[in-house]
Length: 106
Length: 443
Image (cartoon, each protein chain N blue to C red):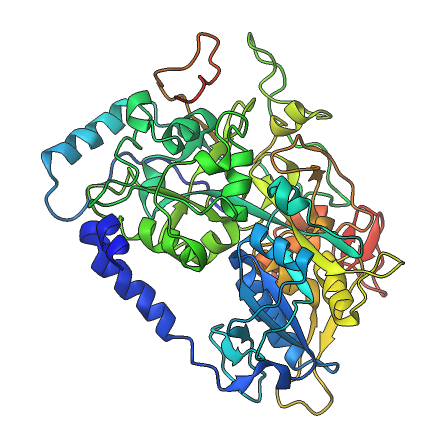
C-alpha cells in the first residue's frame, strides 16, 4: 500500500528568489492551499469479488453527510465513502456569485 | 520559431533544445509503409502514441504478424478524416520488430507514405467524438461506426515538487485560471499572466480540436467556458502537441514561476513524466473533496478514476468502416478492437522458434499504458462531462488491471489485497466469483 504524501510546507529552492516571488510564496503560506487526508485502510479494487463497501464516516453534523456508503446517483458517486487520499481545498476566491456559483465570463 | 521565442522568452532556448532532442531520436524513413508486413493505417490522438507503439511491437512479432502504421492527429480532425475518407499523406510511424531492433526504447521508426497517401482504416479519438463540432459530427456517413474503447483520464499538471505546496485545484479555481482571470479572482498560486507577449507562459493548453482540452473543459464549466474560450499558451496545427505542455510546465520547476505554472495533460502521459511533473487532485462541481486519479499521489491504480471520484475522463473512441453486421469490415481493425476492449482474453504469442519468445495478455499492453479498459471501470457516462452512473462490466478485470499497474501484486500481494482479489487457476478455483486472468472477479 502506497503511503500518502503529507503537506510539508514551502520547500526552500536553490538560488536566490526575487522579492515578488518571496511575496508569492508567503501568500501561499497564508492561503487555504488544501491538505491531504491519508488513506487509512486497504482499498477494495473496483469490481473485485471480495469487495464490500469502503469504510468511512457516514453522516456529519450540518451540511449533509460527509460521504455516501451506497452511492446511486452522480452526486453520491462522486462523494462516495472511500479510503483513497482526498484533498480538502478551500480557496478564497473573489467574484463568485452570492450562492457560490460561477459568474458568467466577461 | 519567432512565435515560439516570443512566447517562451527566457525559457525558449531550453524548450527548443528539449523539443529538438526528442525530434532527433526519430530516424528518417527508410522504407515504404505499404511494404511493411500486413499494415493497418491509423490516425490517433497523440495521447495514444505510446500504446500503439507497444501494441505494434507485440503484433509485429506475433504468430499472426501485423504492422500498426500510425501518426498523431487531433481527435476532431481525425474524425473528420475518417468520416470523409481523406487520405493520410504524411510520413507515418511504426514499431520495429525484434529482428529489426532487439532492444527498443519505444521510439517508433518512420516510413514513407504512398504517393497520394492512403485512406486510414482506423481512427482512434482520445475522447468522445460527440464533443467535436456539429459540422464534424454531421459528416459521419452510414457505414462508418464509432466504437467505445478504453478510458483516458486527463488532468492539471504542475512542475515536479509543487504538489507539496499545492495539492489540488477546484472546479471554480480552474474556471477563473483558464479564462484568464486567475489574478482577478485571487486564485492563488495561479495569478500570473497566462501567456504574456514576449514573456514566459504560465498556463499551457492544447487546441479546441484536441481531446485533452475538450474533455478537461467539459468537466470544468462547459456552458460558461467552452473549450474554444480557454486562455493560455498553445501552438497551432501539427505543432500542437502534448510535449509542448510537458516541456513548458516541467521547465518552470525551481524557477520563481514554478507554483504559478499549470497545464492540461493526458493522465497516461503524466504517468511517464512523474519525475518532471506533478498532477493535481481535482474537485469537480458538487464534490466535497478533490481526488487524484489514483488512490494516492504515488499510486498507479487509477482507482479514483475507475470508481467515479476522479471526474475528468472520457472513452477513447475507435472509428472504422463497418459492414451490415455493424462490425469492422477490415479483420485487422476487428482484431485491434478485440484487444483494446478486453471483453475476451486475447493473447499475443511469438511465432514458433522466435529468438525472444513471448506470450502476453494483450490487455496488459493497454493497461500498462495508463488506459483503463471498460472491464476495470465501475462507472460510466454518455458524453464528455456527463453525469456518472454505476457500471457493472459483464466480465470485470479490476484485479488484473491492478496487477498490470503494480506487478508486485502478482508476486507478493498484501494479504488484504489477496483477500479481495484471490488468485485462482484450474487447479485452484474461486470460492466466489469467476476466475478470469488469474484472479477471482465478481462475475
